[in-house]
Length: 392
Image 1 (cartoon, helix red, strand yellow):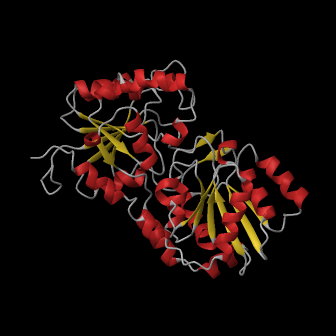
Image 2 (cartoon, rainbow, N blue to C red):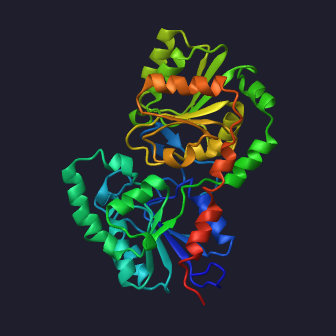
């Protein structure tokens, strides 16, 4: 279908809750010719919530409910919460609402909750074009047991996927995952995992690196390594601390943004190794403030292991033309790590990680990460969605 046709109808996104990375996308679509709604299964995080992994109360400083139409549906679960597994979200009102809506494109994010499964099935029966946008990368799927994958062939390929019109893949590994479970090429649309590139590019242009470092008390001439993630096992922050200790360069400085259950272990390591003057643990930093840390840094590191289905902080950092060092286990690695944007390494390999950091420090290469991440944009998502909107 030509994207130049006039379109009618709208896109309805189905989300468990309001997600700070997704909201700017809905705002963008709504102001660029694609009427957009989001139906939420829970309002747990709208006014701030205690994040168990951060170990602190989180309240985002960007508006989560402005610039697009949204609806909250009552959760009828007997154990209602985002954090209570598959049956934590049961929203029968959402399923019924599908039959009252005119034909629309319904985008369901994943299949981790009861509501999501039934929206996929009932949405198709109600006459909507149902799209599935999950995150699963193939490299992590292959680590699962053959029994696990056999069951998925039955439940996903054999049942759930039959109700889906289009699969909106977020990157190369995710596309391969769908193909592994029998999805044909004509049903695959590229809707990359993206951040608000325009906002980050504006911030990068407006900030002065020397001024930011001075205000943050970051050494002016230092080689500054930045990490921004929860201090949990999946994110492997201890790997970076060990690599940083081994990094044999003068005047090095490490900023680790985040918080979580591993903080005490990290602080003990920093004290034991005498790195206290070279490492700063900032705690949680909100969306409008983290841009200053991206501007202050020289390289960004994502060293996550199994469970890192993408890593949107990499997208953010690349808008500041920061070279990135990313573990090959992360879902974004195959897409965003190129010769002009940085290096990848095997998750958990401290020597490889150290070597990548040293190459960033010593290579003298002019990296151009912003030109790589440009394709992973809201504009690309809009182009793909316009291909499947009903035409007048």
